[in-house]
Each structure stands twice: as structure tokens, then as C-alpha cells.
Length: 452
Ligand code: HEM
Image (tube, rainbow, N blue to C red; front, side, top):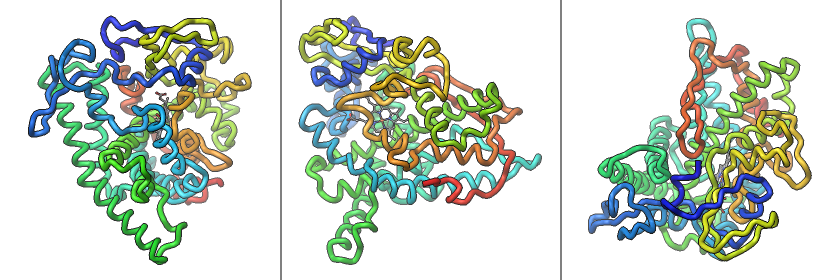
């Protein structure tokens, strides 16, 4: 399914082989083309958004106005190219390096998980078993982690956290609309886009600006010798408050901070639920493995396997010149390329004859990512990969949560079946509900979660 991303009638080359997909992603001759089929919008003098030419008018239709994606995502690393992109990437890199990762683990990920999971465990139902739905649990957990990694103050209060999640959902709704993942009339579409603009203004006023001011004060205290370097947070807003040149436009920081929300509250949260669900099925079919969640290498294999398999989002690129891929296939300047990761990541020539099935013990040939193109490749490869999967013995975002859940006996709730829908963005098949119980209830100390 590649349709909605590209303008109607566009010349699209579909890429389903892992080698070709990786070659395209690594090539400087292709540019990111998310939003190639974005609706065009006009702003009235009050700043309200109107769809130019109706809900279906897209780039290339001759409608006036600016593509929504360009309007809303300007200044965000994913939509940058060349030198500007490289500068922004360099400014973000310290957030995902070793020091920042240790800070994130100790100050954000583990404490957040301990508090949220212990709150669930402290409320057993009438049968003595605590219950929760892992879908909202994961969204709230990773919204709080997002607030820590971005540096948004106040999200340790549940009300404020819900406000932040609400803002993220309103911005995500525009993304879904733009990618034709929902049916909407012109009026509904304008309302959704308008609401995303309003959500970002609220994000700026309620979260971004006060938190940035606080970071500026912390840096001032550091300069006056009142605060050691090690006491400063390793968050995005501290990077921005340091005055890194790539953020000199005030809009750039807001756009970048806003764009860190969805990969956590939506992408990472969704991967957590899939990873849990995949492991539950595997342990059911392989009882001898049932306690292997405690083995880091097994858990790492399980997580990368989940990420390999659950990637329905097509990665779009646009060729900047005529060229030949290493496979010999030629692509012409101006042609779009659709990398269909449901296929590249199940390419039997790379992942074997059983590429379609989930196997946490899968081995892959040298030079191949075990997660396929799950994190992309090349210049736009996910900047947060080391944080998501872990690096140098420091656990990532998903492993500690899975380990903690299994250590207290997580089980699908027999009384409430999980529910999935097939049309979500960014992952086509997403769980909307995954109710669980815990049958080995105890209070989890932080040390039980952070193994390194
Ligand atoms: C399991 C979780 C995640 C998955 C599967 C994932 C996947 C991806 C993929 C496939 C890309 C490349 C897109 C392309 O080439 O067009 C990407 C880029 C990106 N990701 Fe992630 N991501 C995840 C988590 C995160 C998190 C937690 C963050 C932020 C804290 C993040 C921030 C970014 C950014 C900023 C980019 C754009 C990089 C650039 O254009 O240079 N991602 N991600």
C-alpha cells in the first residue's frame, strides 16, 4: 500500500528488496519525500488555516498555497537536507550519546517506570490481581519519558501529563489526515489542521517557553559557578538554551521539541505493546524459553525482531538525478521511490526462508541490521536508535520495561481480549487495547529494573 503518500499519477518505483532499500536510503541522491502528497494550505490574516482547493487538492494540482507538511514541519530535522540537516543532526547527537543515555536511564526512564508500574501494582482488583491496559500505560509512560528527554517541566503531575498527551494526539491527527489515514470532509480537515496549529501554540506556551526559561536559568547558575556541569539536564531544551546555531530561529526549537513527542508517545509506545504481545505468543509456544526475558541477549533479539516485523509505514524518497542502484535498476530524476518495509524487512534472500515469522533467536548475515530497515539507514537513520535499543551495556527504552513487566508476572487478561486496528499511523496495525494482569505482585525497586 503506497498510494496516499504520493501525488495522484506520480511515477513511483516500489522497492521491496532489503539491499535496494538500504542503497536508496544511504544515497545522497534521494531526498525525504514525506509530504509529497500533502494538502495545500493558505493562512488568512488571523493565522487560520484553510485548505486550498479542497480536501483532496495536493501538491502538483495547481492549487495555490503551501504544502501543509512544509508549513508544519519546517525546521524539523527529518525535513531538512544537506548542510542544514547535517548541522541539526550534529546538534542533536549529544542527546543520544553515552553520557546523556546514562542520565536518561537514571533520571528519566527507570524512575518513571518504577513509579508508574508500582502505582498499578498497588491497586489489586477484587481477585487480588492488579490489572492495566498496556496501550494507555505505554503512552503515558513514554509521554513522561518524552517530557524528560525534551526537558518539559511539570509532566510528573498526571493532569499535566494528560494535557501533554492531548497535545501530542492533536498534532498526530493532522499527520494521519495528511497521510489519508482518515476520512474527513473539507470542514473536518480544516478543523483538524487548525487544531494541530492550536495544539502547537499551546505546547509552546504551556510547556516549551516556561521550560526553556528554566533551562536558561540553570545555565546562568552554571556560568556563575553555582551549578556543576554534571548537574545540568541532558535534555533537548538545555541543548537549545545553550544557543546552538541551528536553533537560532525560535520556531526551530518548538518544531523540533514537538516532533520528539510522536516517536515516543506513538512509535515507541506501539513497539512496546507489539514486543510484549510477540513475546507472550512465543513463550506460549516455547515454554522452555518462558524465563528468558531475564537474559539481555534474548530480550535484545526479541525487540529487534518485533521492530523488523511491525513496520507498515512506507519510507518515501524522491530522486534528484538519474542513477543506477547497485542491483542495476535505474531510477530517473523526479521519480518517487516507495520503500515498503513490510517487504524489505521480510526479504527471504537476507532474513531466510522463514523471514515472515517471529524468531527472537534469528541471526542475520554480516552487514545487515537485525531490525531490517526498521530505523531506516543512511543520513536520516533514526537519531534515537542507540537510546531505543541501548548502547555499550546501557539498556534502552524498551528492554527495562519488558523486563519489569515480566518480572511481576504480566499476562494477557483472560477476561478482556486485546483489540487491534489496521489503519493507524505510524504503524498500520496497532493495538488499541491490550489488557493485562500481574500474578507475581511485589513492589519493584529501581535496582531490579536498571541492570547496568
Ligand atoms: C522503536 C522506536 C522508533 C522507530 C522504529 C523509529 C524509526 C525511525 C525511522 C525509520 C526513521 C527514518 C525515516 C526516514 O528515513 O525517512 C527515523 C528517524 C528519526 N527518528 Fe526515529 N524511531 C523510533 C524512535 C525514535 C525516538 C524515541 C525519537 C526521539 C526521541 C526518534 C527521533 C527520530 C528523528 C528526529 C528522526 C529523523 C532523523 C533525520 O531525519 O535525520 N525516533 N526513526
